[in-house]
Image (cartoon, rainbow, N blue to C red):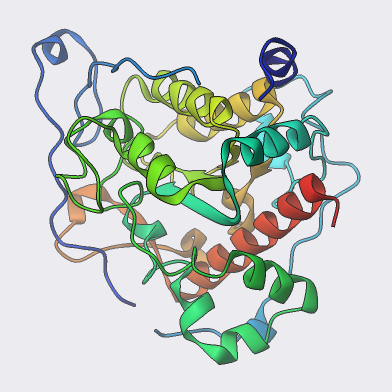
Length: 315
C-alpha cells in the first residue's frame, strides 16, 4: 500500500454563513467539467517534505466483526455503504507517521479539521469545550481524548469554512489573508504551519468538483509528508446523485491504509437521513444536518478521533 511504500522511502440550529466565498475563475475551467458552485483550480506546486441533544440519548455504533477490512477488501462502488461507522482496523504503519511528525515538531495535543461550514465550531465540535454538561456526559475514554486535544475543538481555521472544497484548500487566496495566513501559502500549508497538528479529520465533498479526488490525493500526500495522520470521512448527502464523492473517499482510505469515519452509515436510521434544505439555499438541496444528525456527527467524530489516537499512541 502507498503508506508503507512512502515510509520505506522517507522516514515519514445555528445556520452556516449565508454567503460562500467564490472560487476563482481560470481559463482552463471552460474546458474542464465542474459541478455545484465550483470551478476547477490549477494545482499549485506543493512541498514534498445550541440546541443540544443530551449525550445520554446517543447510542454509540459498534464496529462489526463482519465488516470488510481496508487492507484486504476488494472495493466496488457499493462496498463503502457496508463499512462500520467507527473504523475496526487501524494500520500499524500509522504509528511511524505519527512519530515522524513528532520529530518534525508536530503537536501531539492538536488536531485540525478540513471541511465546510458544517465542520465549523458552532455546528460541530465547539460544544465539546464550551458546555461542561456535554463533557461530563462523555465516557471516561472520550473525556481523556478531549483533555488531550483541548484547544482544538472550538477554534476557527482556514481549512474549515463555508463552501470549502478540496480545490479551495489548495488555493492561496481562499483564506483571504486571515487566520495568520500569508497569500503565498495554501489553507493546508497555513494550517500545518500555525497549528502543527498530529491528526487531521477530512470531511469534504458536499461542495464538489470534477477533480475532487485528484485534489484530495494531493492533500493526503502533503499531510503524510508532514507526518500528519489523515482521518478520512464520508459525508451525509448525495448531492452529486451517484455517490461518487463518498466512494472515492473510501477508495483513497483503502489505497493509503488510512482510517475511515463512515459518517454516512451513522445516519441510516434517521428520517430523511437527518438532512434538510436550508432557507435561502434551496438550490443546494437537502445537505444540512438537523439537530439529531448534528449530535451523531459530533459523537461519532469524537469516537473516531479517540480510536485513532489510542491506536497510534498505544494508549
